[in-house]
Each structure stands twice: as C-alpha cells, then as structure tokens.
Image (cartoon, rainbow over all chains, first blue to last red; front, side, top):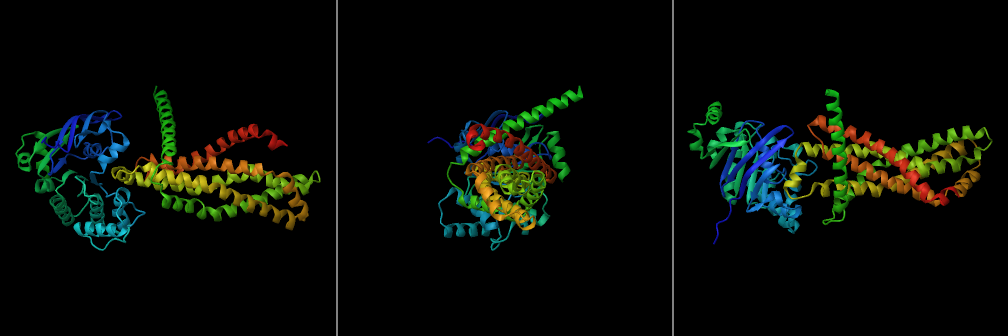
Length: 247
Length: 264
C-alpha cells in the first residue's frame, strides 16, 4: 500500500503584493498528525502562508499541495471539497456577529451535512464542552471576552471533525492564564481528534512548550526548522536573536 | 512626472474596479440560480429592504406629491389649466420621480447598510471565514441582497406612486379647491398602464445597480473602521450617480421601444 502524502506541502511558492515579495520561492512541508508552529516577526507573511494553505490566497508562482492535490490548479468545486477537510481559527475568531454562538457552530454543520436539528444541537453542545464553554449557546459574539471568542471559534473550526486545523495567532492579545488555556486546548484538540495542526504565531514560549515541530519564517523563506530542542540550539543568527529576545 | 504617475494609478484603479465589478455581476447572475436557495436570508433581506424602508418611502412620497402639486398648480394657473394637475403629477411620478427618488432613498438607507455590513465582515475576516468553510461569499452575502432589492423595489415604487398621488390630491383638491372628479378623471385619462410598467421596470434596474454597488464596495473594503466608512460613503455616492446616469439611458431606451405607447 502506498504511503499517504504529506498533508500540506509548499513547492517554490512566491507571493508578491505590489513591490513587496512576501513569500520568496518557499518550500515547506507539514507533517501529519503533529502540531507544527510557524514562527516569525510580525508582518513577515505568516498569515499569508496560512491563507495559501486553505486557498484564501493564490501564489504568483509555485505549488501548494494539500493531501496529494495541487490546490492552485483546482476549480471552485474541488477546492471546496479540500476546504471541508480544514478547520480554521482566525486571529480574532471571525465569528459571525449577527449569529449567536449556537448558530455560529451549527453553521458548517447546516452547510455541509444533512444532520437533523437534534443531532446539530448535540454536536454543538459536545464541541462547546470540548473547548470548556458549556451553556453559552445563546450568547452573541459581542457578549464574549476575547478568549471566549477564540474558544468558540475553535469549536466552530472543529465542528466538522476536520483532518487539519489552522490556527492564526491563537494567543495574541490574551492574558497569560488564557494563553495557557488556549495552549492546552490546542494540545487537547490534537489528541482528541488526532489532527494535523498548523499554528501561526510569534509566541515563542508557547511554541517551545507545545509544538512537535517549529519552522521560522524570515525574508519570505523558512530559515530554520526542527523540534523545539533543535531550534533552541540553532546557530542561525536570526533564530538565535529571535529566541533570545523571547527569553 | 509625479502627476502622470498619479493619473496612471487612478486610471489603473478605475479599470481594475470596472473589471472586478463586471466579474462580481457575472458571479451574482451565476450563483442566483444555484442551490442551495437561501430562502431565509432572502426573506430577511426583503424585510430589510422592503418593510423597514416603508416609513421613509411613505414620508418622502407624500411630500414629493404634495410639493409637486403646489408647484404645478402655480405654473398651470398662468394658463388657467390647473385642473390638469392630477395627470401631470401622476405622469411625472410614475415615469420618473417615483422610481428615481424611491431608489435614491433606498440607496441612502440600504445601499449604505449593505456596504457597511459586508465591509465590516471583510475587515474582521468573516468573509474569509465563509470561504474557509467552503461557502461562497457571493452566494451567501451578495445574491440574497441583490435579489431582495430587485424584488422589493417595485413594491416600494408602487407605494411611492400611490402615496405621492394622495399627497397631490390633498393639496390640489382639499387645499387648492380643484374638483376631485376632474382631478381623478385626468389621471385615468392621461396615465397609461405602460407608464407604470416602465417606472417599475426602471426601478428593478436601479435596485440591481444600488445593491450591486453597495455589496461591491463592501466586499472590496480595505483597512479597518476607516475603510468601512470610506466604502459606505463611496457606495452611496457611486450608486446615486449611477442611478441618475442609468435613468437617462433607460428613459431613452424605453422611449425608443415604446414610442407609440408613450406618445400616443
């Protein structure tokens, strides 16, 4: 039996915005079933990289492979089939502010499954339980704190039990206790669902604590990659400075 | 040199916007007939565009008819033809004033809201979240708004027609003492159903323009709160101007198509 392909692979991806080259001939692979962190300074293109993985942005050149398919060549219908394998937690959760928590989490279920209302209610309750927020179904996103919004965003991201979860700056702007909660939630979700997780962040302590693998993005390329221990011993000048600045 | 660069940038941006607008229009037409038909969203938008605009349409329609009657009587009195006021007001309303004014009012209320709502969703990544969840944002956000506007605008224009004529009746008959039989008879005699149909058809085109511009400006919002504000303003200004420009060409077209009917 042939081996399953890597879930996400970038091959020579270049992306420019006007004169600025954000991703420069980038090669990168995400291993299956692990938590991979992509670290880098603000504005280095981490979110751009993440948006390429789910087809929110298309590269100017190069290929983005997801589960064995080059998504840069897919039509809308095929791309949507690929997207259904993803869950994504946006930086500010991106909850639909006109819908309450229940409707937000039920949204992907209503769109992509034929579950009846009882099953949807059970699934929403189960996902909220998983993120530690039972009983908030009828609250509006505006009534939630930043940390709660992120947890509801995560509950929505995992509603369809995706194979891959993308986290865009999950701990930015949160207090240390909430950061710890989100960290353990990422690990718990990973273990409970055995998913491939990609976390975009500049939070080095979190990365060193929970990542299986860390990649550092600088100048549009991955300049260092490895386990947290590897990164801490890296001789790359930028990585050394970056880790030193966080400690 | 610097000015030339700026002019080039403006031309480039304009051409790009026209292209994007055309592509979005094609997308809306393509997705309008695709499943799932989002009936709940359509009804919500119809309630927003139709029901919630009713009070403003009643108010503006009534006073438009009333003031138009006042001015018309003043002019017609010079020729001792003030009894024609009913037909003049009714013709002007049904052919021109009701569709244009009604759509301009709805643009101010709904076009701006569409741009602000979708613009806010864009800058808070809610539009990206839709795409990430394999839901086409044009299908989910734009199609129900455009359809709702196109379906509800003729209803509002018809309300505008009726209330406008009522306003003119009040001024002409109750205040200026014009015989109510002559007032109503003149309307029946001079206003052809085709005048009403033409007005209603125009309003559907204006509604399409208004909602498309509102959604387009919102969809391509850049930046934060400032960007949303800019999009909202641009949506109202652009849609209002476009309605007036389109009105001229539509009037020209209808006059050519229904020459016999209009001028008989």
